[in-house]
Image (cartoon, rainbow, N blue to C red; front, side, top):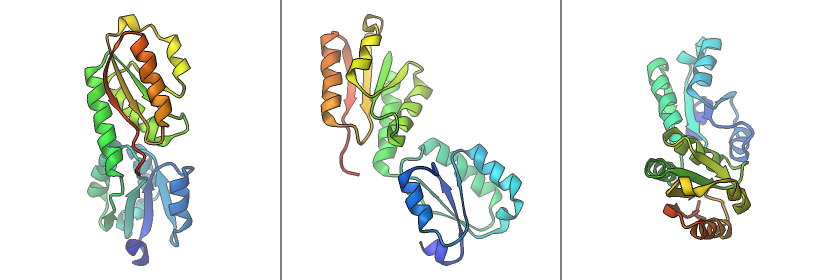
Length: 192
């Protein structure tokens, strides 16, 4: 990146074990640091106070939680004297998180369909759960058999970006058989 060519140290918000993050870090020529939360970022600065004066480049995993990123930036603006910020959160991801939040507010129970290993799906679930505690991540339609739907007239459904369309349709089909009202349905986008 241009920032790195200027000798800036990369500060990356994301999961160090995620393939996207591993790819970015594999290209770094200068020392770098990763963090997953504002708290971890604050601790980095407590342990290395010299970071406040250094030329830094802040960027994030494209599926990083939007709210958490805002909190991190708030901290960066307070303590860093020489930071560049590169906003790389995928806009589709941001819109999806916003939709999940809104949907959770209109539902009695919410299901996020997708792989338990998918950071995108996990972030959607985390975002919805802040609004509606009865939010569950499910990988297979069979997991729905454990729920008693008569207590929840409005069911919200959303899905991670990489969730196969067939699984989403199976879940919606299962819901129809339960005679519950599916509040909304956000179909997985294949295009990012």
